[in-house]
Amino acid sequence: MRAIDDIYQRPLKEVAADTLQRQLRTGIADDALAELVIMLREEAKLVQDEEEAARREPQIICSLGLV
Image 1 (spheres, rainbow, N blue to C red):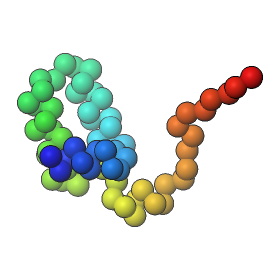
Image 2: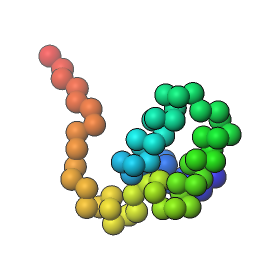
Image 3: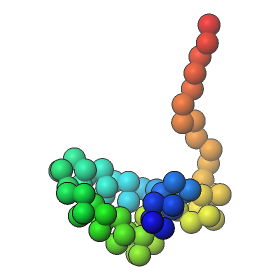
């Protein structure tokens, strides 16, 4: 549960995003994916801590142009 909360509250680290994307492309089983997320969290490789998130430069996620 804490890993899910972390994912919703803070951005993923680049290593975690790459690892998870690679595993999802290979068709990883749900239970193996859950174990991977828990392992990444335990090793502090899942999400950015508050200081890292604060240091990040702002980036445009989406833009919408209206005419």
